[in-house]
Image (cartoon, one colour):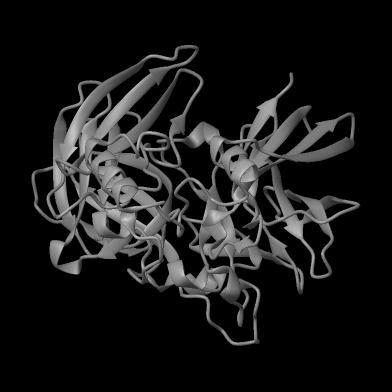
Length: 414
């Protein structure tokens, strides 16, 4: 394996003082480092000293909004001030962009939601620069607010902007007690749309209505062309939860910590959007392969980064072996053969399978898949799988357990 470091972020601390957080997404961030060199692995982790974490430590209580938590105002005037800040944007600027910007060696692309005039701004930041430039704006077709965009895909020439009916709710943003959908509301009557923006000019080139959907993570997207090279359609794949919002409630900590042997994990699939580029008003959403291939579990995906925005064949994700209450397998999906290979070990919870290509590789799946696994007795280990065969190459046990993490990146050292 090449010399380099895998860095993984995710929630790692779910309490502050006497306060216990409610949701997986509430936890304060823990950074995990796996450094590979000369056949050896050196691991470490630390709690990130974010502004929210430092304020909570200082005051022994939560001070910033979290996913399902809102600090209670000291008095009515403080509440009115929070309301004013919400509409002015002053209280939403810290992490207003999507959770998953598109990062390449040349640039970073992200989307910013606009709650006042419902829509999204596409923004570009050149590598090595702190300056942001607005590429363009997409106005929402539905309402009353923008749909939640946790991630979005791009092709070589286009930015794909999803607009799903899980929409921000101003009332829920202010409430101290969680609602069933936390900061959001489900608005099926507002329908669902996918917008296509030119990556360079910022102009809107297509908007289509699609079936209702719910997704956290897009896998990839690419352009279909005719014999003359004209783009006829955009294909965009995602981990789609069958428009079932119950997945948010299933990620409450009390549900994750109390598995009773029942099959309660909502079904998911590789959802494939087919977006026509000929002016047609409707697009399609279908399963890219039989969801039973991966146990009807599908999330936390990665691909060979060389295939970002291009036609691709393989994706890696967390799947399911049922009954379960959380994704408990690693899966390699073949989108040409419509098959999946699955890794499973009883009683453990693997995190995101991250694909690292072998230097000089010519095959898409020639590389290593890294996952940090949480064991059933509190222990943990780093797992390496062959990207092609999906067989185990090696594992390195930790002397302590690590919390379930979310996403990582690879930093090559050569």
